[in-house]
Length: 101
Figure: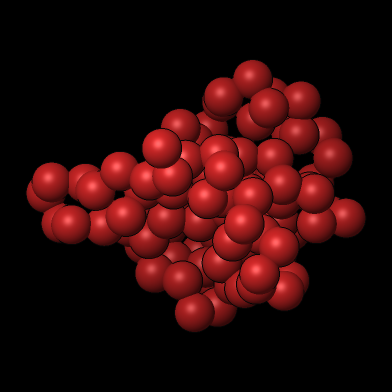
């Protein structure tokens, strides 16, 4: 299975294989939220990304979009739903920036 369709808004929710292909196809920073190394172990466990750990965000994303969570070296860590606007992710020091699945 590559993806699911979210019933409420018909967004495509990528599963791991599709996320890997999107990561290869689109170059940094397209579709990405980059986080610092301090948060990587927690996000790998499936925890959410908090705004204070975001170091870079694709400016074309919007709150509610699906995004790829990467580390500073562009290694894919997780996928999730962006909860804040990209500018808010990099400027806020509190709150959930990405709800990881």
